[in-house]
Amino acid sequence: MITLLLGLFIILYAISKIDVNKYQKMISAMGDVFGNKGKVVDIKTTGSSPLPDPEGYLKTELNRLIEKYHYNNSIRLEENKRGVTIHILDDVLFSSGNADLTASSKIVLHRLATLLKELPNDIRVEGHTDDVPINTSSFPSNWHLSVARALNTAYDLIKTEGLNPEKVSIVGYSEYKPIASNDTPEGRALNRRVDLVIIKK
Image (cartoon, rainbow, N blue to C red; front, side):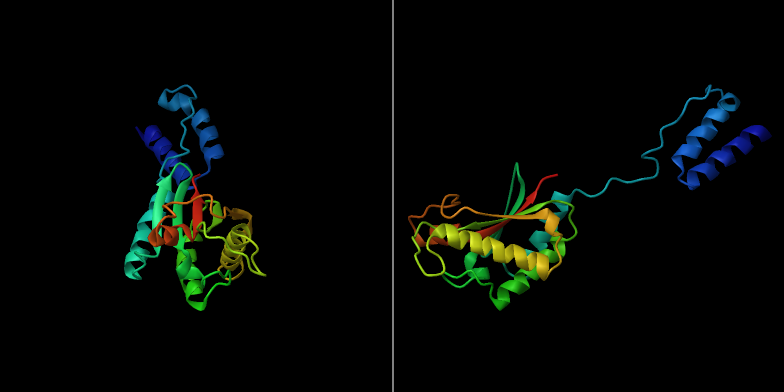
């Protein structure tokens, strides 16, 4: 009995040190005492809890943020096979036909970045427009506008908010990825947006 108790306390001490290699060697050496003939026990998950699901965490916290700051009409969430997409309508971030972030838009991005920085996922920043043509000295086409808006949004998240640039990418889709009909003003307003796509791990 004394021998068995001594073996038990040695095992408990080894586990408390969380040294898997030493634990496995010790178990092998003491196998005969416990009658398991040197069988090694896998303790890789002993005493640990699974990490929270990043996508689930994000959706929960984003919904709280949207409700707290009354963004219901400006920020929408969508979950699909790519991951979680945050649709940010352009009137939250930009003036009409412009790609420069407004002062208020930086507050919105700051609030979102507080959550995004907690995630291990890659983030894809996508610029979108409606199908109304644009032709200015700054933006000869909707392609130019959508890319510029995605770029400025991503740059602010990286430079100002400290997101890891290795995890951020940008793309401009112009008018070719609508989420609503361009036949109505309401639909076109939904299509003028920047999407933050949190890529599923």
